[in-house]
Length: 258
Image (tube, rainbow, N blue to C red):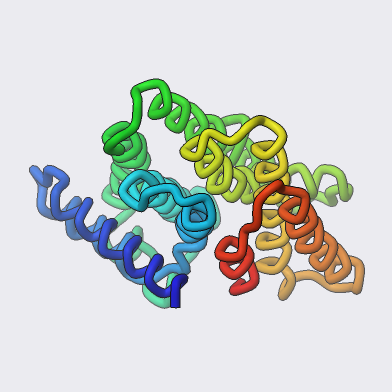
């Protein structure tokens, strides 16, 4: 019940963001709504909000940051689907954005979401400026060249090549794990947790992100080794959570829902 409520809060907040954002050109707003409000698990924001509930972080503080995570994730999907990248025809059960609105508008919509993500976090209420800057820096690092974009770059340039396990692990940690890690690290910033707890949440997020990527790729993989790694990464995430000096029932429920 709590997870359904939190997902509903995210969806309503995202809808509100698009309604309140300036739309000087109507097609941009239409494309944004098509891409952002047309489905999706909302897993990254859900993990943050579940952790916020465990740590008694006010929803009005966590929700804008949670929306920023979903905006960054959606921007990455839009760009990944483009012909110059994965050339995907469908996303979330319907034509990919560039098929529905054209490549140029799809590219601009992704750019709009990325900039809106930082704007949304910058406007988070009841936070001192230093904490807002810390959150923005974290999101930039995890989504940038040392995180998601870096992993995606190596992944794209490695297509058609045989990759050794350490490089595959590195790609998955950067391409997917980095933003999952950010979900939990944002919670640690909002709650002002000490570094040991932050490190455990960072580790849990990375492991869970790799698990999620392996699960997503499993249909295209053969052999028991990938399944064993899948189980191992999931276990690593929950093991890190078990070492925290506080309980995380809502976060663990959210992770078990995958």
